[in-house]
Length: 279
Image (cartoon, rainbow, N blue to C red; front, side, top):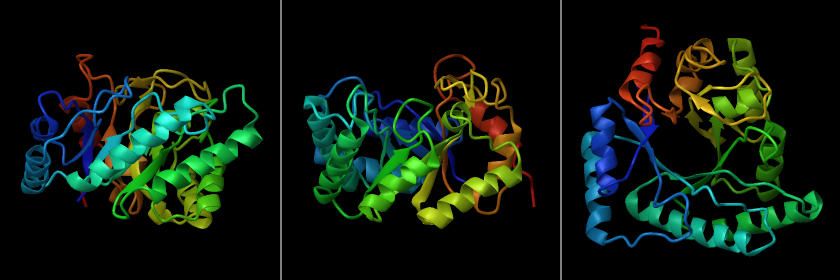
């Protein structure tokens, strides 16, 4: 079964995102654990967490992922770095209680700091998070669009191989990859990415696709998502992924603006479903 879902609002409670998933025909889900624009994390009652787990399994909306808040910069040697660590430790501990697979995170940037020095800050912070969280949840590195850590697969591989922790996983965002100069418009090009992941860190590390079109041209270094088929990527890249015998086993989430500009919607998912060839 192909798992297709969306990043959806938790307004009204975590379980309300499951209802929203059902309404748009999704069978996997990504959510924030709280506001993405503040360090403050919400209080969570045990009953709320139990209800979420029960409903998730009853509706078969699996797996569920958190997306870390926007403020995270794990390469920062300042207070921001420490807050990033604390927040992700809190979030991954919550994930374990909710049967959430893990947290998708943008690692951040070196800013004006010395990259060699702050690379070690990044590694130390990632190590601390992994050491302080349960073994059944993953920290999922998302590729970046440009001028941020993780713009190329090699950068991600270097981090994973430095830490050698099986809980470090990869999320590949099509918009970010396209903006960073990585084209998946043919099956051969998709195979090259999958082979690179497999040979360098193991294909089991790739646990999530973000299927987003791009408002900006190839190699623009700009992270601006478009609805499926309305951007510069077109639909062929998505068809390649959804019909690939390996790639389509990996859950896929949309983070599109929505055709009504209200966020990821049924129409975007239906377009993707329409690209799936029937056996």
